[in-house]
Length: 246
Image 1 (tube, one colour):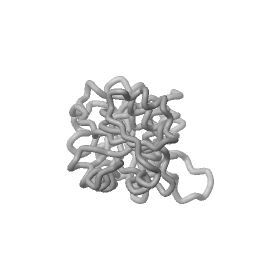
Image 2 (cartoon, one colour):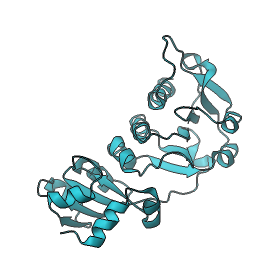
Image 3 (cartoon, helix red, strand yellow):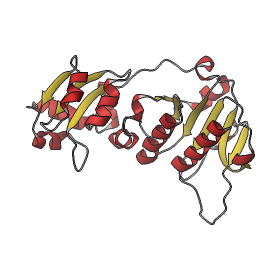
Image 4 (cartoon, one colour):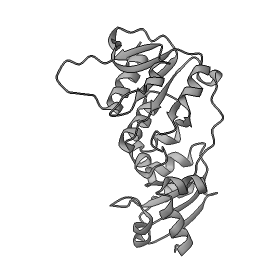
C-alpha cells in the first residue's frame, strides 16, 4: 500500500521542477523497467500490481519493491491506461563532455527540440544506430519527462543525454559540425567522414542563428514533393542512416 507521502512524491515527478529537486524520474511498464535494471541507472524502487511479470522482479532482488493495487497505480501513473508497474529511477549525473569522449564517432546535438514525442523517438533512433550521446540545448524538452520516457521505450537506458549551453560547448569540441539546414548540401552527396556532430533544430524554427554560425557544413534532405517541412525525428533518422551507410 502506498502512503500519502509516496503518492505525493510519485505524482510530483510528472513536473520537471520536482524531478530536478528530488533527482528522480518515473518509468512505467515491465519491459522498460527491465531495460533500466540492466543498465547503469540506479533503480530506487518498483511499485507493481499482481499482473507484473515476476521474472523482472527476480532481476531486481536488491531493489526495494512493493505490490500495490491497480487503483493505487492509477493514482500515480501519468498514463491514461496504466501498465503493470512503475519504477522510481535516479537521474544520472554524466561526466562533463569533452573531445575525447566524442572523437571517432558521431553524436547528435539538439537545438531547442520541444515535442516530447519527437524527443523520445530521437532517443530510440540514437539507440538503434548505436549513437551513445545526445547533447541538448538547455531549452530542449527534458528527457526524463514521462511522455519522453514512454516514447523512447527503454532506449533511454542506453543513451547518455547531456544538457548544456551549445554556444559554450561546440567551440571546444574539435570535430566536424554538420547542421540540418534547408539550403545545405544534398545529404545523399555528402561525405560525412568517420566522426562529427549532427545538429538538429527546433520543430518550427530550425537552428538558431548563433548555432548556425558554428556549423561547418549545412546539410539538407532534398524535397521532391510539396510538403512544407519534415518532422525532426524523421529527419534525424535519415541523417543517422546516411552516416551509418557511408
